[in-house]
Amino acid sequence: MGRSMLAKITAKNQLTLPKSLTQAVGATEYFDVEARDGQLILTPVRIQRGDAVRAKLAELNLTADDVAAAVAWARSSAPALANEPAAAYAVKPVKPVKPKKAATKKTQPKT
Image 1 (cartoon, rainbow, N blue to C red):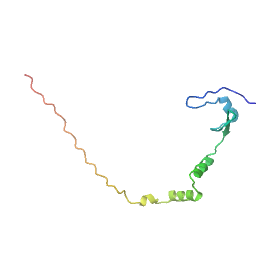
Image 2 (cartoon, rainbow, N blue to C red):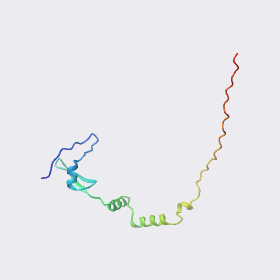
Image 3 (spheres, one colour):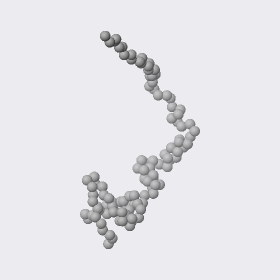
Image 4 (cartoon, helix red, strand yellow):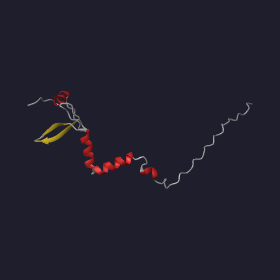
């Protein structure tokens, strides 16, 4: 079998893996975690950025046509939002603030 080391789980369910063990399986950011027969099995997963994007698109039920339409809209010289009418609410003009007069302290003659 492989090497065995002790790792402690924190109160927030975080586990720090010993560096020597993670180096032994190669550089990875993610692990597939499985509970099997009272043991936790960690398997390194190497996620490709393109795979992550495709997974998110699938999660959102976006099709290739949806993506093509969004790209075409973003590349157009006059996006549809620029041609929409102005907001339906009125903006109140801001009144200029008048400067306050310097307060003068009245002094009474000493008697």
